[in-house]
Length: 314
Image 1 (cartoon, helix red, strand yellow):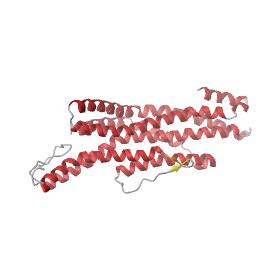
Image 2: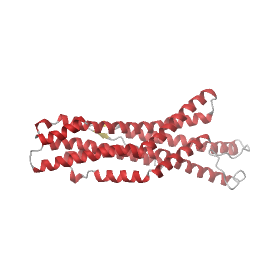
Image 3: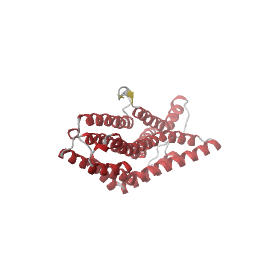
Image 4: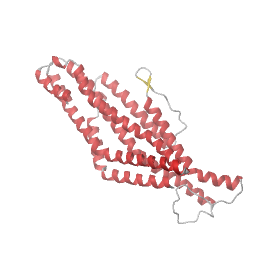
């Protein structure tokens, strides 16, 4: 029951934050859509790089979908990319999401299991208990069918709340992955533009690439303002819950605290992937200057070198 109250408070705060920031999130998504690179606008090399990166994000999304829509029977495929290097993140994302779903299911359905064992195997009279203790306008103690229906409703509502608790982190992670793809593409694009022969087409592409890089930096800044509070809510609630549960479990040994601690530890994995995605994004953004520096930029005319030196120093 304490776990339900904790989840409801956190879900309410996330919902309020999503409602407040909905226009900003919408604006951010549309801005990223404008910057998204279509295959016909890219060279064959950049198209290949983009498709590999998008496949990684697609695996991440499918892993979440399979878990939260209960498609457990589909066997997880181990994708191999970059000449046989297994993509670590996506398979373990599915495992972590599935673990959260299993633990939540055990927690929510445990009272029903105990009632069924006592009632039909041990033939004892027991009260019909539920995990979340929702108030109902009817008495389910005398009606076993009503009790079963209440457990099912509680289970579905709790899974929806669990999804809402995690969906903000998934949305942040996917947004960072897409922005990271754009930064990786622009690294290779700078290399291509620098190596082009000096003509009118090079000057046009050079200006377009510089402007695109500036817009991507603006998106990177907007990402913090759009999703910073959502991540802070997840991080603060998770950290405080783990601290209190560890102290309570060590002193009182309450089963409720142990259940909450187990779910919190599983949620840490999603926070880890969110932090991991942010670290990869920052690295990709900073590696643009490295990509330029590794190319023969010093052989360009003076008008190009000034702009590139500014990017490298930034």
